[in-house]
Image 1 (spheres, rainbow, N blue to C red):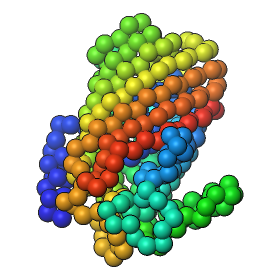
Image 2: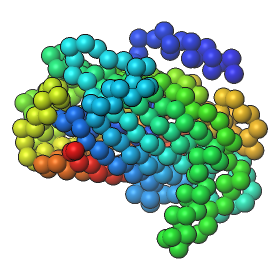
Image 3: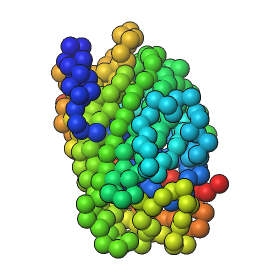
Length: 323
C-alpha cells in the first residue's frame, strides 16, 4: 500500500494533467458544437470476437448548461472567459476473466469485477489558444452492489447464450471516488480537414491511479472544435471524421484488478507485484454528425495489464442527438 500512496502524492503535485476509465466522455474527437445534447455509449468485446477482460461498458451522457448548478460541479475546474461545457453521466462497467465457464477461481487470470458510478464533468475550452482542460468527478460503487453479475446473466439468458459462471468470486463492495484531469492542445491543423493534438491525463482516487500521454490524429470533414459552444454554431450539416489515439499509460493502482481501497475481503485479486506498470493503448474510430444526430464506431487495443495476462481488444458505438 505504501507504493500506492507515494504514487498519489507524486501525481497530486505533478504538472501532467486523464481519463482512466475505458469510456471517455470528454475526448477531443467526440466534440459536439452544441451545449445541450445527450449520448448513449455501449462498449463490448463482442465487436472484436472476444469475451474476456473488459467485457462491457454502458454510459448515458447528458450535456446541458443547467448542470452548472449541479451540487458537485463546484468541485470541478472552470476558467473565466472560456467556453464551458457541463455534463453528467451514469456508467456501468463489467470485467471478467478469459473464461466464464468455470465455477472455481482461475489463478493468474483477471478477477470478475463491476463498477456503477455517476460522473460529473466540465470541459473548459480556450478558443484562442486551441486547448481544452477537462475535469471529471467519478462517484459510485464497485462489487456485487454494482450489479455486474445480474446484468451479464440477464443479457446471456435473453440471447440464449451460456450462463456465466464464477461471479461469486468477484471483487467485493467498495466505494468509488476518483478525480480526473485531461489537458489537450492542438499544435497542427489544416483548415477543417486535419488536426494533430497532444494530450496528457491523470486520475487519482480509489478506482484508478494512472497517468497517460499521447497524440490525437483527426482527419475528414468536420467543424472547428474550439468555437464558442454557447453560440451553438454548426457550419456543416454533415460531418465525418476519422481519428486515431495512441497513448502510453503509467499505472499506480487499478481496483478492478487489485480490489478496492477499504474492503480487503476479496476471494481473489491480482497482487501489486503482478501489475504491469506501463501499458500502451490505441483507439481508432469514425464519427458522423448529421443535423441533430451523432454516430460513432471505434475499436480499442491495450497491451497486457498484468504479467500473466495478454493484450485485449474491444469495440463500441455511440449514438446521440441535440436537445
